[in-house]
Image (cartoon, rainbow, N blue to C red; front, top):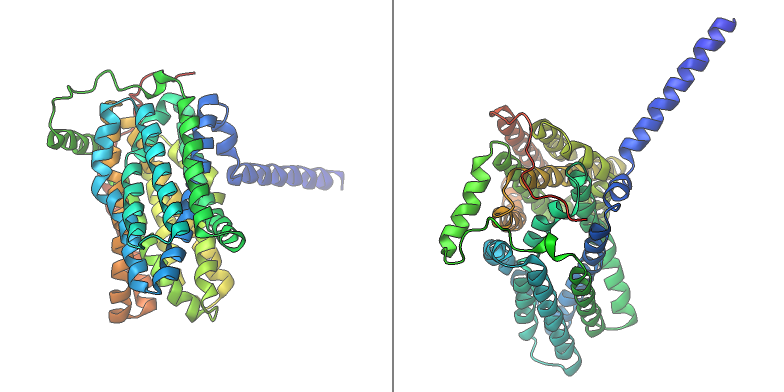
Amino acid sequence: MPTTTHKESRNARSLAARIKRLAALLNPAQPFLVSLRQRNLRRLFAGLVVSQAGDWLYNLALLAFVYERTGSAAWVGITTAARILPEVVLGPIGGVLADRHDRRVVMIVSDVVRAATMAALAVVAVAGGPVVLAPVLAALCTAAGAVYPQCVAAVMPRLVDQNDLPAANAARVSITSLCVIAGPLVGAALLLLGSAATTFAVNGASFLVGAMVVAALPREATRRPASAEPESQSLRADLAAGWRALREHPDTLPLVGADFVSSTIYGALTVLFVLLGQKLGLGAAGYGYLLSALGVGGVLAANLANRAAASDRPRRALIAAVAAVGVPVVLLALTGSTAVALVLAAGIGAGTLTTEVVAETTLQRTVDDAVVARAYGLVVPACVAGIAAGALLASPLVALCGLDATLFITGTAVLAYGLVAFVRPTLSKPILIHPEVVS
């Protein structure tokens, strides 16, 4: 009897230890705790939180303002296109600017110009100016921000230790997910309490705060790379250098491709979730529930993404992340349960975030600091274009095949890409070739 009791006690301790390890693995706060040990990264993240939250509440206010003034869905579509297209077109040029100039100065100028466009939008809203200025100013704001993500991606490896880079990327992408969830809610509250002009002004102030935060970063972390090519090099040559950087390392391009595929699926789901919500009997609210579950899944998977990006073999992490996107999409075609659909949507969000973190960490580790912004400048617009393409293709595919078949086809396509990318030759371990961390 005592032996049995001792054995049961040992099993209980073992189970408790496993539960503790699982809780640590799933703890979404862990990447923040790891990455925020760096003072300069805390500064950068503070600016990102303020700026991105402002962006999401501004997006809602902009579309509400245009629709209120015009009553036209076509105008809303034009405004949405004006807000997105400059990022696709100018993203590669933004990468060139980030590699050619002091990234700190470029980020500050970007924030100041975007603040000015928000001030102009607020004036248009208050003074009842021509509504055509709304999409024009939205396009200018996006154009000014087309350089910002490239600068952030290039600066981060200078702000954190190599071992902390995956956690830093997981925390940064999680910030975006949190802003996706919270931004529209705050924007809706501002619209109820104030007006679109107030929301535009708040977003403008957020850019100024971001500029002040970036100004506090050390110049050593943001200076132009010492190994950069001469400024006389042509734009075409600059962009070609970014493309070569993506192709030179066997792991980088397949992982970036996975990020593009995940972005395309996300774009498709922004349409398919509307139809799925109707199928589940949730009505118009179903879209919001499913999209929120997607964001929540991404936030909760932050530490899983951190562990995956820290792997010595990123393509093994890729296959797990891609499976986490593809399998739930397929299963959504088979379920009629709201609870199951929400869990599956959260799984897709987790896989999407993990794919992005693994891809970006691999890119930062394998691409030279002198060209990393140009390489990233090709990735960002491609992913944004993927979101737009997914949204545009979803409706015709549903009309042709039906909702369930469309979900099955898209999920299977994701899994097929993961399989093809996984079986190709791979590097044994990514090599960090960035300069030393600036403390």
